[in-house]
Length: 330
Image (cartoon, rainbow, N blue to C red):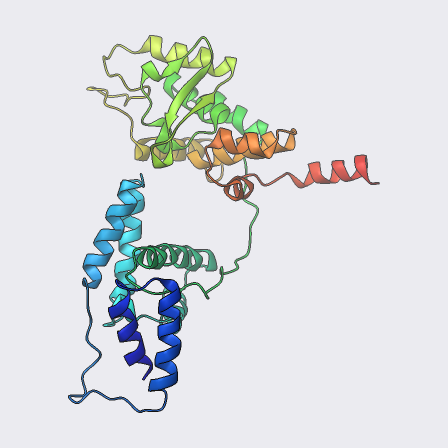
């Protein structure tokens, strides 16, 4: 009976808005609740509308139009495809229990973290919310699945001594400029590789980066970065417009993998633990908040749409919390 009511609701989605649909649901439950309904041939309830793959394709197109990167689109696609591969049910008939069971089973089989499961939940929530907004379903089945709590670990940042050690260990002018630019701007590595020389304003010590969602924002660098960046650019003889290029000819634009590999190798050479580009970003956020920079300004500096994201990057140093306690309370 429940499947029969859901089938009627799905068939009427294009013709009724929320208020009449709720009344229809109540009426169907009241009337059909008196009967046992089975299909004559024993088959499942018929499905109307686009297939699951078509709905997913439309959703990904909408996300692409909103400005999501291709990397994000691929992550969305793989997550939704993996979920669809575990069921023969049409998306319009999926229930909260189905999604909850899928998340639980996936956590057990993959043995991934709670944070990873919550990322999957968020993606599926976005997908089903879109289906609801587009009137393919009456109500998202993930509404009742709450955020999955996970242990929040305090991630490491670079100390001043570590940063100086990296500067001293840099073997090329490019490495030195790269370290200083990441340290003083806190930009994403994906934003850095898109920069051209023309994007840098040396007089004002700033540059415009293209962040997530194709949103532009200014970032700022210090005097030391300006000097090292100038020295690096003056040493180049190529004609590539990119701000950072490979060391070997034909000196193409340096890619994310190249920056990650170079910093990883530098860390090994200096016996430093886990040297990677994103750690510079977290270091800048933490230092800025520790020194009293308003969280809203740190948010603008990092290019976060929501302040919660900024708080996750900026883990305040516990020693500073202790000092503040002594100053204001003890």
